[in-house]
Image (tube, rainbow, N blue to C red; front, side):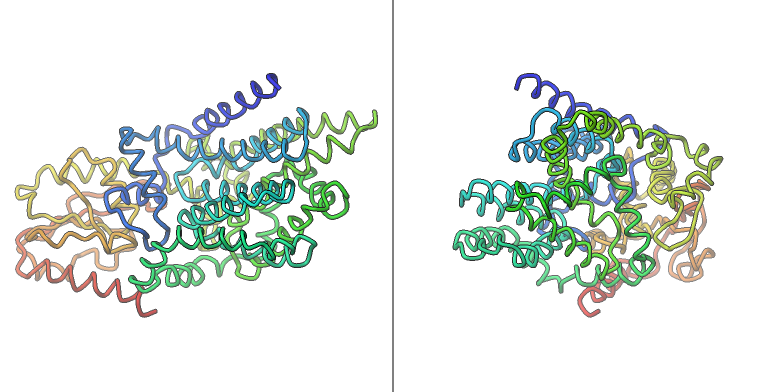
Length: 511
């Protein structure tokens, strides 16, 4: 047991360290991370695209100093805890050291490394799914009703992190009903756990109701602009690639759950996998939405191999399964992780294209993988905006207005000016606009596809309007960003801001 614990500790620490080694210093944080970090300054029970948990972690990050180290540390820590839950599943199923090693190695050397690279809800989402399945395993093993209440807490907190946990529950319901595990619905303690989950998520549901259910608008917008480009073939291909080195173990897990007597009480997990995948395919979901299905299967597959493969000729196969995950990941590490410089990616574009890494949410191929391109040029933009802001005489009455949340969040995160708060009518920033200040000047940060580069709309409204600087980074997702200065307002700027805010909010309430 001591040997096992030492190995597990080394594995979990190694997981955290590896997350830092897989990001080239040439890259900044990613667009979405800046939005989540800014949520710390606007506490609420919900946001337009995500529930409140990321804002709580953002507060903790800033309490620790707010540096990029801590931004990267927390998703790495969550990934490490996810592996720990997988290993606890192995032990719950009676697995020994080999099963622990196989499951741990498979989880470590997988694209979970990519998932735990960014400060987004996805890392905790996978942890919530894995914990949910683990608690069900514990219940059906022990019949201890306390696990129903743990399940309620898990689902509730998972919901406050990312609404995707609803698909885990949706897949479990028919899976439990078509197996002998349907007896679970006869326990009143299950409904006690469901009540706990409802109590936990109720503040967010109340927030959604008051705001006109923005999550529905967000999903409609996502479906129209991104999910429409997804197809079944690409979705299924990605599922196989997530744990490529452990694919045989996952297949064996499904076999064992369906046919092995020792796992018959957990057969609902086989059907849960099938039903959940079908739901995701039907809704044309992004491939990584289904990531949470697989970690628990690693535990089952590993225990099956350890217990069932006992013949001498199978020893070599067992050894091969141990080394397959790192061997399969190493040749593609430069492709799926931002470990190489942007210039390297540009010079080896065919290699990345063959893996589909250059295909963005718009369905088209670009210079860099989308996440990589979304990690470039943000510090440069903040430095440039700071230099412009430094020369503004009346800072107290100057509004900084960005086109999108990536620009606003990055400027706020990297700016050296404590009083500088960039605002936007995009995403959650529309609810954070400051209308208590009387504005007479403005600094506009505009995207490269700006429809009014001559500022024809603003020129009659201010004494002077001019382009002051451009941030050009050809490989960034926003290759060119323009910065304009507008001085001496001739109109009531605040009233225009309020009107624009209401127009944007009505989109969420009425569509």
